[in-house]
Image 1 (cartoon, rainbow, N blue to C red):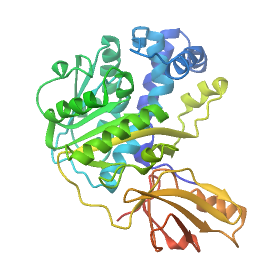
Image 2 (cartoon, rainbow, N blue to C red; image 1 turned 90 degrees about the horizontal axis):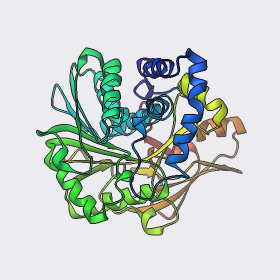
Image 3 (cartoon, rainbow, N blue to C red; image 1 turned 90 degrees about the vertical axis):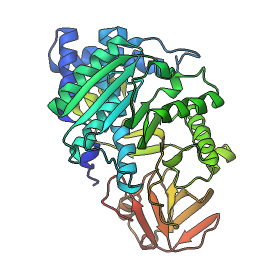
Image 4 (tube, rainbow, N blue to C red; image 1 turned 135 degrees about the vertical axis):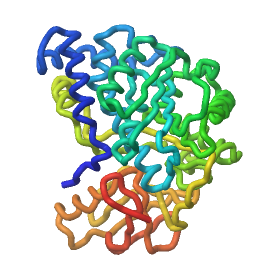
Length: 390
């Protein structure tokens, strides 16, 4: 049985805050309040998927009930997605914030799922104080941002907001930031072409500390993931900014070139009780969080080991084998691990050690298909759930 990394747990304070908001907006208590949220969660779910607008998203945060429904159900998932991406950058790519009081800019912040997650993890890792700024075009969302951030971060954070569009740099606050996070905003900036997005990144760079980190998180949908990957590949190829992840180097993504699959992360998570309760009638598969991300810095970090490969597929268990696809120096490898002699339970435990997004190495030569005789021939260089090192 896997144990969640403490950095990836949704904080109890955060869960309690949105439960209280649900009670206030419905006039009901606990489970009755959450049950009343269910149809509004379903309405938002349709908006994000089958009813997704072709142009601009409506400001659903204007409605206090929809804002609360988002906070109860969707915000915890985005919060944890952000924590997974940030941990990868801190623990594996070894990016370091040198500012004892990190300045964090959350572009298109909504009620704070991504920016508060970044600030919370810094505090978990021993930072004494953070400065968090949220920018969003919805005043209602920013009001929720301030309350939510204060509830989770307390007096260890200086919190401020600014009404503005994430796609318009003239609306952003001045000064440089140690971390700029843009969570689920590119997919709402459909009016920007690929070249427009490059210009947008260059504007973000102007607000980034010389050693700062830019983290972009997007849905795991094919369209949004491929759009982000094209941008990431172009930035890496032209050397506009150093790419830190999830790609291990500056090689273009082979999945994008092949057009069969698209790069995204799949991570197990500990489902908060409130999310689980609301989902009893929605029946969504919440066992994992899925997302795509790209991270950049003006400063190069230590290189990854030359033998490193990144898993880019689900882990398959077939007769006598564990199989998955990994990317190595811009090329795909199909890796098969022999499991003969192991019970079904043992194979399941072995396969459960790996996830899409993990970084591994093996003793075999690079080839389109690699066959390993046992799991012992595989080295896990980075797992979101295990303590690993380079």
